[in-house]
Length: 324
Image (cartoon, helix red, strand yellow):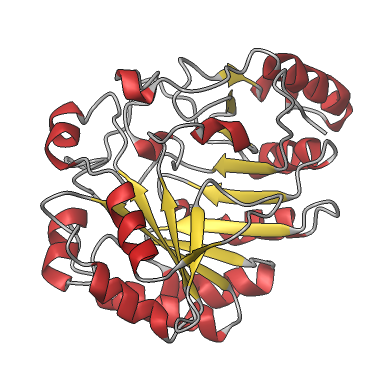
């Protein structure tokens, strides 16, 4: 198993398959996606196969496919199938803005998708449109219901935004009362491109946490491959509430995630100063031992914690680069 110098063991790979996104969310890409000149193409299907096999052979049990927006790739179903057919991988998950859910969720499920995270920053159609740049809330929620009917594990991600959606907790609670959905509120994170927006709209997740505790929600234990959310349950609700609070004390002590960008760079942290190239080790299956050795060597350089609270966001210009 991949392990770092702080004895953190890594069982979870977040693999970006594209940095392109068709939404223009105000906290991430307010002016829409703009392709960089001289940017390397995204990983090919065969390179993705070798990455997943290489990580799976070294203790990775869960693969989450992210973007940008992964569904802009026409071969996404093939990628899901590759991950699902890798013997060591127990869970294949996908994070999406939901734009293409009604169209593709059945084929993704048939390919082996088990878990789905959908970004829904508001349940009010007008505010959803204002935040994302798209009037597609009804289609997104339709896709969510289809995923539930298929038996997928569904989570909704909502970036907590002061002055925009921070008063909408009652509406979100109504949604999870009768549905087995995990709703996660994510603290807005500072990136290279959003300093002014961050200063205006950042709100600590502790305000939501305190409200949940007052309403008798109970904190749950984390599983081995769980993400960073602190989850709460309530006997009167089918769903759960999760909080991702990267500015909280000791947030990094339970880190179990490695990230690979759509260009094949290993990022030891979402807010690392730079990515580490892996693509040169993804040309032949015979390179798998060298790939594993290279990753393990890099892991010993992983820092104990990020420095978000000090205003350091590393090389992350916006969250579409690595899918969060």
